[in-house]
Length: 312
Length: 312
Image 1 (cartoon, rainbow over the protein chains, first blue to last red):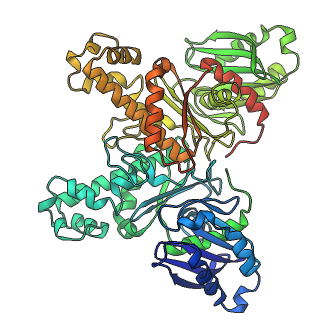
Image 2 (image 1 turned 90 degrees about the vertical axis):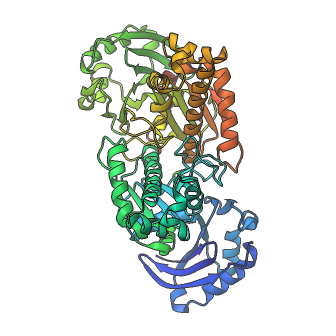
Image 3 (image 1 turned 120 degrees about the horizontal axis):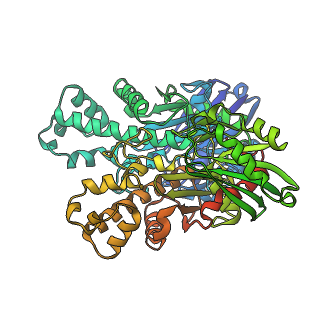
């Protein structure tokens, strides 16, 4: 099966031709200046048309990964967080049929990444998986029996970063208190550090507050950095147990920029899950994702293969 | 539709004839002395045979609610917690066909209660619901699109009481740390009180430590009781937000003995959910369950009506 894939991120969109488990061609479309989706659509169409005619032959449809909540049955965006707020008004399927005479399928980008990892990455052959993405925010997406969970309004199984993990935590951007994301994500890290006893005299205080520096200082033995790293690992571990108890997976996958420190994170989480998750049937495996930013592109293949078969 | 229903609890089993939304007959079978299931089966068969012959006419099957994890596709118990440990070895379908020439369907008792409330109780006509039971333990069961969530090993959507809600909590019976159940259930309450600053001089200290007394002392203005009640409400609220973010329901139902104080609990939880849950589509409603211990009996009707249609 050959498809066109569009993965819409915050600063650029990736357009690609994907066939089964291979990306045949890929191009980036910068979109940093745009806060609406409508002005970008012409650029996306132009980018897709730059692909060699031989590559476009036999394409069966367009898969569109969107960074927000989507109604994938009707291929409509249902909710966005700040950027592309006009997307809920746009009929992307109509756009696709008009521009390319091709059907379009819309899905949340994190769900697509999970589908991609399960097709051609670290989750190959797996059917019951939760994938966390540790970065500026925390993504957490659940698949049951090979299909991403959807729920009544398309938001089941897709808010794993917004599981409350502590009773006295800070307010999250989602509105809840003490979410995994508001306790241990890239945007929360400077807030966590600023409140941590002893931070001012830590070696961490002299550096930009990101996870790369946190893990570097902790690795060098800085006491405060070690404490904050332990806090973050505990938060991620707690969200992992919540997800296991909610969705009954056999595999947890971890992607995102923070996974540069996978050598520390994966063994910690495997041990945390072994000790804490209630899984009388056996042990949940913990593994790093493989495909990086290409995961969502591969996911489009699964999206078309699973047509109309989502768990709702 | 007319069925036989068996709801197996810790101290007694309830046997009933149920037709659509009416319980035609009901009898209790004491089982307190038994720690195995096999010796009870003859008593259950005898109890079902005491029903009037006219009631048994037209019965289409037996529904069996079990207090543990079940494989409802194959009608086998998959995991028990201490009691009825022989249940995993018993072929209940074979028993039912031999004794009554009727097909048997097995389901977790909390899932059956949720099905029952959605057929004939507080969730009537609802399809996307999470039901919590606040009692000695905390149950939490999720339904998506009219069907209880199951997962690969039958434990998806059924462990809502075992969502970690705090990073530095006590060890739960399930093995995790800081579960809703280990922070604010009937069995945890004495432990919570014993550690609470000022408990020794509270009016609560003179009474048996149960939720009835906690709410009574708090209602009378006892400062420590008010603090502990607030703690428990926050724990239940956090588990509610976790469940909403995981399962995308439109309705939360609350049952169990603690709901004698529904006048305090339901308004608190409604406000907590309104303020904390991320539901751009609208507001999740919070409601007390109606059917009490009869809920699981009604659930058997749904179990047969939904034959083979579970979300896995």
